Amino acid sequence: MSRLASRCRRTTEAGRRVRDYRLEPDVNELVDRSREGDQAAFGELARLHQHEVYTLAVRLVGDRTLAADVTQEALIRAWRAIGRFRGDSSFSTWLYRITANVAWTLKGRAARQRTYQLDAMIFQPQADDRGNPEVAGERTELRARLGAALAELARSQRTVVILKDVYGWSHKEISDALSISVTASKVRLHRAHLRLRELLKEAS
Image 1 (tube, rainbow, N blue to C red):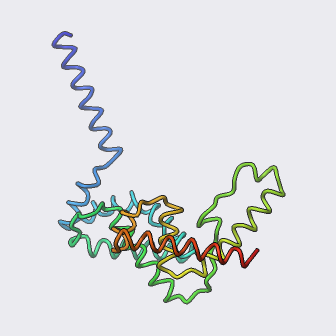
Image 2: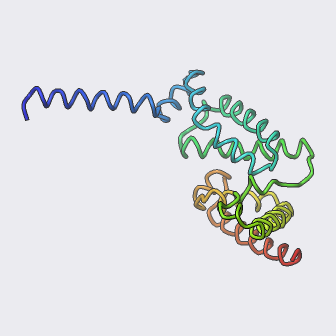
Image 3: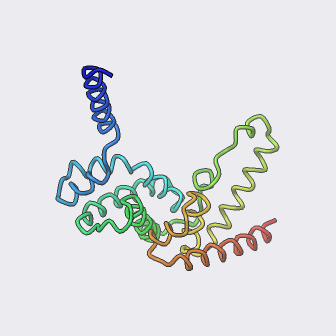
């Protein structure tokens, strides 16, 4: 390869890296800048994570309006606490931990009825439901039963069920997010599954 061709190739690759950086900001760099008080950097972090924070909030509190409040409060708290973020876990895990804490605080403060929107929490309608009213009806009934059963779980158990069964988190990720041991996470999930089976059997 000629020197000119080699130089052109390096220039092209460098340009591609610059474009990729602009499209996908470096989260670690944004975190470092945020810890130094850069509000614009934290604003970019908030933009990158707000959808996931909101989705988690919906699944935890079961109310979209309340979830929006949870999202806003969680991001505010994260900004206030970013200087104390040590990086022991990923930024997203740290942010989800704050979100979970805010969700339960606002849930209790609002004293809302313990009903949950299963369409948003666990199951999305399947494509084949639309052409099969019988299947759609069965799924709707199942979602309602699961929603009622989940509402009966203790908050600590319900949180682990959502993070493990809905989000697919590992027990290590759950333990980091909730500040509990891996063993405690496994025990809570096991007990939650047993309780759910009992509740679903009673409802059948």
